[in-house]
Length: 391
Image (cartoon, rainbow, N blue to C red):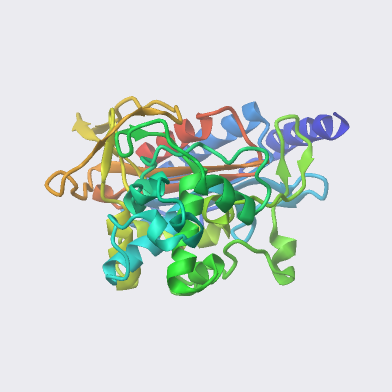
């Protein structure tokens, strides 16, 4: 409680005395840029103060032009301010990196989306009745495999996980129900490791991080980068120690604002993106399943938009993690849509993240924070920022 009280006091002082806590990386002097800066600040400052968020990064692309904004503290106790090199846990945005690796293998014709998971997981192959002989890589990447959200508490190691899920049985029709699953993406990571004979972090670094000029972290933070690591805070305002998670392919990537701006540039398919990443990115952003008002790509959620009176109209989307009815899209319906919000959120103890893009306007937003606000709150703010950037 003492740490939480100190957090509240420091935040109150910070927001009270700081005349401007936003700084743009790109030197813009025109009125539209100044207006964007003001709008971003007017959204973030009251939200952070209301939710008690110590620090945040907002990376923005607006009409293809990058901007960056830094708010608050990476470490409240040491009063270290957030900057572009501050390293955050990005949580489930990791799933986008894993999906890109899958897409690259598919485009290289080394894997097929309709391949079954058991084909590439030896521990499952002895079980003739396992549903993984029917669950495809497409199902794993689109959360339509019928898998649970997380592993049970009795599962502590990778060996435990493979043993448990080799005997697991689904209670839904595979492909006909959407339910968000860390397990599915974690198992997809095993598939990629078994197929390529490389650790998942080596794949992240070699195939995505280094080609995009991102810091070569992935799932680890070497000692040389440790001083840049943000401290996470729980809802009570107390510091959270770093935690290891079982399915690294689902949630373990770490990145800075500078890194995520480069990733977002690639997600928008802007000029200069390496072709093998651009082609894979576009495939991940293509819808393969539909659940209500939104669609599911490989990792990404896709929300079709309409334009009225020069404004984007955003349909309602449930924040539920499922299960909800879903349908698999045919090749005729599975088309890349630039007039959509293509997004992903991430959550880990002490951290919350969001990335969303609208390719039609070459606009996008990344939000990284070192405290977890209310469920769905970061997505709401992300939408607000994204629609401002897209005007």
